[in-house]
Length: 406
Ligand SMILES: Nc1ncnc2c1ncn2[C@@H]1O[C@H](COP(=O)(O)OP(=O)(O)O)[C@@H](O)[C@H]1O
Ligand SMILES: [Mg+2]
Image 1 (cartoon, rainbow, N blue to C red):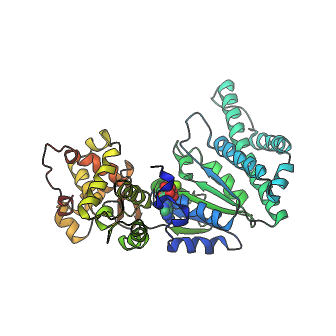
Image 2 (cartoon, rainbow, N blue to C red):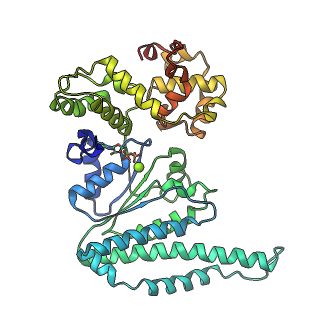
Image 3 (cartoon, rainbow, N blue to C red):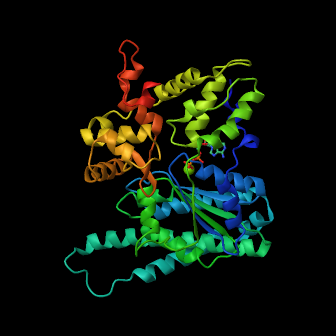
């Protein structure tokens, strides 16, 4: 069955959340700058794109994927931004037409001159050989030039937006990826901020999944996104929210189901995983089928089985780290410092804290609030730490009461 016929994937059926209204309110501000934070697969990207779709607003999606070591962050952002501008020009809208008229080559030669002037090094080259210094200077000029060109492109966009009385959205998604290589992309983020903070026509949204890295952009003296615009937190879905959304869709398709709590208890409120499990339940059933707890758990297992296990990452964990990871997978979002958690973990606060830090650093778990953690990829982690469950010949030993039911 083609996935586009699945009710849970249809944009007209999308789940509306209170954050949608918060986003819409922020986007109506005179100056609209929003930083969206939340664990991965929680619906950040979709919230922004559906807003743009519903409001019929031009959107430039600058989605940063892994930045290769030998490529500068600036040149990557620039390439994506220019591709998005080109796409806007293609639409032939008022905004696109004006943008098409600005001469990119002129912009380029101007920024080149600026970048060189800024980098002129006074005096000698110190202990470094002139040749090495020259290469470094050339690289630095190229990096500065890319950053200056990003600023120039954003400036053009702002001018065009003002001229046409439109408010395009510039969406920097997964922006933390610019920081992965020793924070080499920090100047690029600064260049974006220094230019965009004066803008009123263009609206800016920054979203990031990797909390630890995204935090670097938002907290601390050196953070370019500090105190800029509003922060919008996207919390995990509750079971009530999931049921209110998905149960009517299942019922419309003739399935008998009263709650998805069994299917979703391990999914850490991540809409991405919820949709996957709902799709699986839908594909494997037909009208009049009863989707009870047992059927739901089978669907979870089937989806988890399809996911790559994390292998080495989890096998290298200490027993304390493994205990804490298991606990978080089974109890997403609940503080591991609560009494029942401690009773089950049998670890002191210090050991729990140390384990949590390692698990966050290994990107196995994400924090989204004080003492709130979810597995980064719940089913993936689940499949990795509990492989015996997939082996039918061995009876799996339950880890916790809730796992026992699976
Ligand atoms: N409100 C929603 N209703 C239905 N499906 C959604 C909704 N938000 C996200 N999804 C689906 O969940 C998946 C993950 O969402 P995404 O926005 O990519 O998460 P994030 O950007 O936080 O990593 C996507 O496949 C998306 O289609
Ligand atoms: Mg995303």
